[in-house]
Length: 452
Image 1 (cartoon, one colour):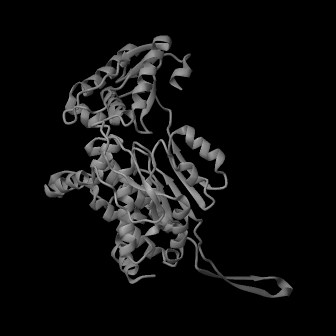
Image 2 (tube, rainbow, N blue to C red):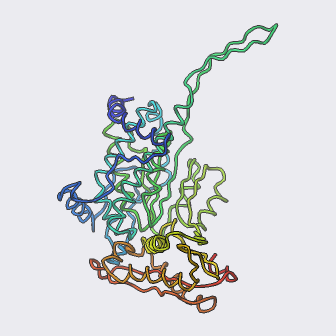
Image 3 (tube, rainbow, N blue to C red):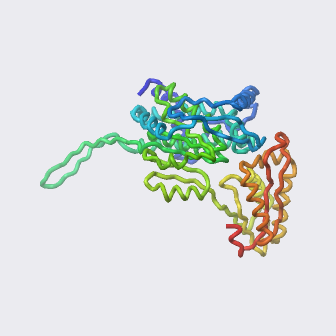
């Protein structure tokens, strides 16, 4: 225990209590600012954040952590389609796990309140670099500026604090000691004084996704640290920078509070020389937290059964439309979410199921074709204005997404027809951005191989 940890527990006690209250009531609450508006932050912070991001380009990312055996990393911006020119420490997995395990005893000597205090200090210090993180996320994931600031900043940190609060609650639900007494008749009373100690499971490996690098990383970091488990973060090869920035900030907070910074470590790699398998199959890996493709997530579930595994993979999301009393609202909502971040979110609807005979809307029956026309017109309206398209669609993270659009366009000729074709739009700020508007295909229920 350090005095700094005790002080941070006191400093953030009110925030922790509000987080616990939000868990109890499920009401909206956030300690973070989700808007990048200069009316809230002033003009200096946005400019400083952009300058901080630009200052990292074309240089080695310095991170003082053990096990460095070289340099690695090759990220390409979806907006400029040029390399960021940043390299990161290439780490020896054995050294990372050894350092993480060595950092555990001091951290686990803390009370839950002290651990929560240090973690909440991390969260607020991470918020301090929200503007730099927004630009880093834009130029690795392809998100729009607003989404990168809010969704990958404040909203992701909200999820981190929520995970922290539930971890704290789980620890507090276990008493430190208990008096147990039972009468056994002629045998008399038996009295036991019981003591309980919570123990961490071990080192966690957190595998981050390409399109939302921090969305699941922050909850995994704080859930693990709150429950005593060190974290090794393995970013997507094209999404290293936001994760590296977070690791560096967390390590700074730990060190300033008197703890071993190796509770949080980075394991960067490239597509050509991946490190994931070596990390998750390491003997000292106790927890795996994975976000990414369904194929690799399934492989982890089947091949890492000796670990505690959490996977969050892509869904095949459907919307079933039967009737509505607000057709305009329904159309607008669908059009917005289909355009949002070029449909690269795991929550984006992919299949819209509409009865062949049409639907009842605002008390009247409209045909299938009328509904389809209204939806495609709403999408075309949003993507026809480059400025609006930039805010909604942003950039496409991977070239493979464009290849998939081309493949589906070809399949539509066999199993349906294209109701609205996909095309690049001209980004007003980044003329070389990789962009695509939604592709809308009409098919029928018989062609499940296409829509499933």
